Image (cartoon, rainbow, N blue to C red; front, side, top):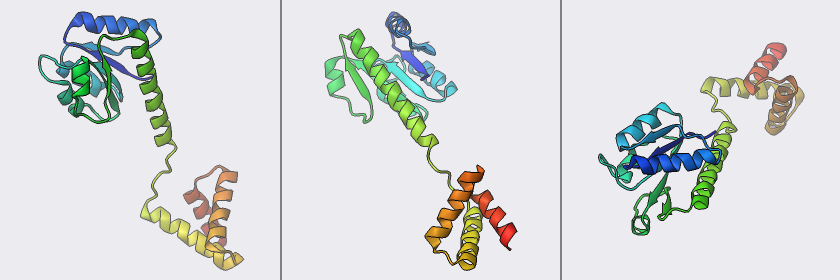
Length: 181
């Protein structure tokens, strides 16, 4: 579930949007009336979406966007002229008057995008240290020498054994080195 922060200078506006989001199955983590409150809430959460207005008592939306921690996106709700004149990239903007369906669909689209981004980052292969790379290279060299394999075949063999045993590539390389050395 994506963290949602609703931040508008008028508390009535913020509460109305919170109510609308919650009635449609979204969980709102915080309702804020200043940029500082929104930043404080964002820093306590690990990422999410800030649904906010154009101007706060203490800052503009551009400053809020600039200071948001990584993992946060912003949905700006502003007048059509302010939406057209914005100079911030990677910012979603909805023009007022706000339509309920547009707000809900946009929040759902942003949640889906964040979920896909998190999933993609989790599936990224981990970087190996120089020591681990050296260990794998030694195991491949030993397999190439002993079994007359090419480098690609030795690597494939390591990968296959690693998957079959449910161990990491480095651990499999260690096992091969200890068994064949």
